[in-house]
Image (cartoon, rainbow, N blue to C red; front, side, top):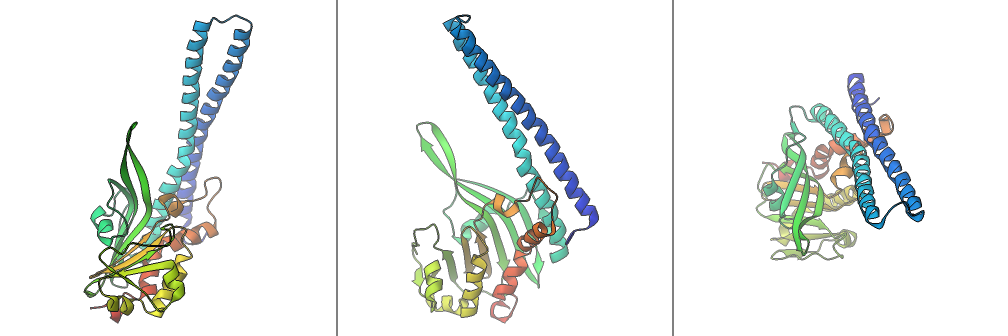
Length: 310
């Protein structure tokens, strides 16, 4: 198997087997209880039709059966949750192993979040009412420090039924340290799912020399000249090429001495792995591409070279 050792392969197989076994137990118990509830419901209707059950008792039986069905659904749903739990654990396992192989001495913590202030500062999203983060990694590639992490952004929504939190953005966020201060802000945001328009606020909406690029992305900057300095034809081509690989929004920003990238693909899309079979080389190749994205961005935009160097 490509990319991972036999020892790691065995560890992943053990994770999958453990999750599959526990998941099957809860799902099967849920199914059995649900089947019992269906049979009991049929029996109640038959007995009621034969006048063996009084009206008062019928209500109590229906309430009891409703509770049985709720328990069955909870157990079945809990069993299915082991799939996503396995996927997250397996991805975290692979990301740490491959992250160390690709980037050397990394900091990795699947339960840690990239700081919310970092996400807010990039300006891609409204400031959330509630923020969750995970799968944090920090390291270096070609001398460029970077950090990444998954994010879930939620806004509070009040209704007559109480307070609810709605997820409006979910994905993976990257921050890179540049070698020199660009002296301003250039934000490149994808128009997809934004009705084809982006409010520039106090920034200028910059037109590039590429009609195709301007149709897909909005370029916002406090200095149009600086924006065109950053967005060379080669860089725009790289952005367009990378965007095709992501199902969600692909947003980028150069702000002062930092470079930010957000891929709003959702945490599950990022870490989805097959659960009903062993991992194959094609699965690992796709995971490898995801884990190696910090290197891909550094190489694609040449942020380790003179233009962004010290």
